[in-house]
Length: 314
Length: 253
Image 1 (tube, chains in turn blue, purple):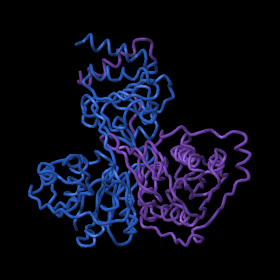
Image 2: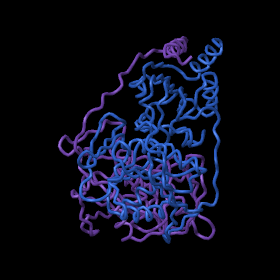
Image 3: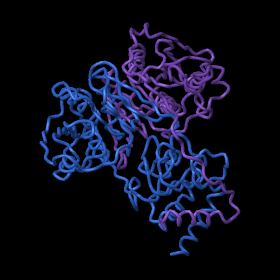
Image 4: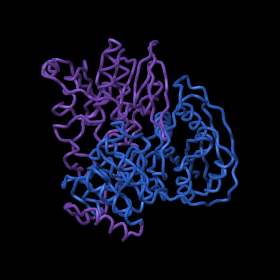
C-alpha cells in the first residue's frame, strides 16, 4: 500500500522534513507519493523525486492559510488512492492539516513519532516525558494512519527512480476564510541552526543584555546560536532560534547550553547531540543530568573567559 | 464577544510523572495544576473580553479533582467553567478530546475559541486544529500576538519557520496562542473570593452525546537508555579551561 508524505513549500522548495520522511516512506513501501502545499519549482520537485517520490500532488491556496483546503483535497485523494499512511512533519502547516484531516476522516493522529512500522498493523514509536520512556502505539480499525513525526528522526538519503509525475490540483472551496495579509522574514546570521556542527544555546540565565555573548562565542567557534523557549517567549530572539518540543531539533557534534535549566520541553530538541556541555549556576539544574561536562558557575564569567581563551588559541 | 478558552489541568511538571503500569496512562493526582501554557490563553481571553465587553468561559476535560487550576483561572477574571469529567474518557486520544470540547463549546455558544498550542504533558499538538475543523471555523494557529480590529475581526501574528505572518479572520474563529504572547496576571484576594461563587458546571460525555471509542492502543512502554551524567565541576575561575580541553578532545577546534 502507498505511503504519502506531506510537505509545505518555501519559495518553491519542499521542507527539510519531506526528504527525511520520503527516505522512511521508501523503506515501508514501493509506492510513495507527496502532497505539497504551494507550488514547487523544478529543483524542488526533483529533490523530492531523488528521494523516492513517484507522484506529487500540489495545491496552492494563495493568500489563505492552507490547512482547511489541504485537508479537503487530501480527503478526496485518500479516498481515491487509499494510502496506508500519511506522514507529516512538525511545521505549522503540517500540524494544522494533520489535525483537520483527522477530524474529517474521524481517524486519530499519532504525534512526535521517532519511528514507524507497517510490519502488521501500523505502529508508531515515540518518546514521552522528555525522552525517558519509549512508547509503541498501534492504530486500530480501518482507514489511513496519520502520523506527525519528529524532525531528524530519519536521515535523508537519496534513492528511488528519480522520475516523478507532478499533478497540480485546485484548492477546494472550504467556506473557511483566514487570510495572510503580511509575511515577515526574520533573517538570522551565521550557520544554519539545524545543520551546524556546534550549537551555542542561551537560556534565561544569560539575560537579555548579555545575550550577545552567545553570538560572540558562536563567532569564535563557527557555531550557530539557539535559545530556550523562555528566551524566545521573552522576545529576546526570534522564534527561529527556539530549540525544543516546539521549535527546532538539533543534533550537533557539540552542544553548549548556557544558563539553560534543561526543562523537558527543551531537552527533547537537543538530547541526541554528540557532546553536551552545560554552564549553569544551579547545581541542581536538570541539564547537568545529561551533560558530558557540567560547569557549576556564572555564565557571565565562564563564557567571556572561554571566548578569550578560544581567541588566544587562534 | 463570547470567548471560550480551553484549559487543561495536569500533574505539576516539577514532580516526576507516574504511569499506571497496566493502562500506561499518566496517573493524575487530586491536586492537578493548570497547564502553564494555558495561562496565556486565559490572559489573552481576559484582555479581549475587556476590550469587547465580552465574557470568558473555561472549558476543560479531565478529572476535576480539587479544581485548583480552574479556580485560579476564575479568580483572575474568567466568568464560568464547564468541566467534562467522565471516567469513560480516561486515556482519550486527541481526537476524542477535541470532539468533547467542540460539543461542550457549541452547546454554550461562542464567538472565539482560544487554546494553547499543545499541552505540556501530552503534547500531541493537534487538538486546536481538530477542534476548529469540528466547529467548521478558521484556525489562526501559533499566535504570538492577538488583536481585535475595528470591524470585529481577529488579527494575529503567526509564528512561521521563516519569521511571522499577519493573518486575519472574521469570527467565529479559533486562535491557538504560544507561551509568552502576554504576561498572565495573578489572582488577587478579591478575585479569589469572587471565584468561589462562580459557576462550575460538570458534565459527562453522555450529556454531550459522545460515546468514546479507542482508535489506538498502547502496545508497550519501555524505559529509554538515558544519557549518563558526565563530570560536574564547580567553577573556580578555571572552568573555561575544562571546556576548551573537551572541545579539543572532540576535535571541533
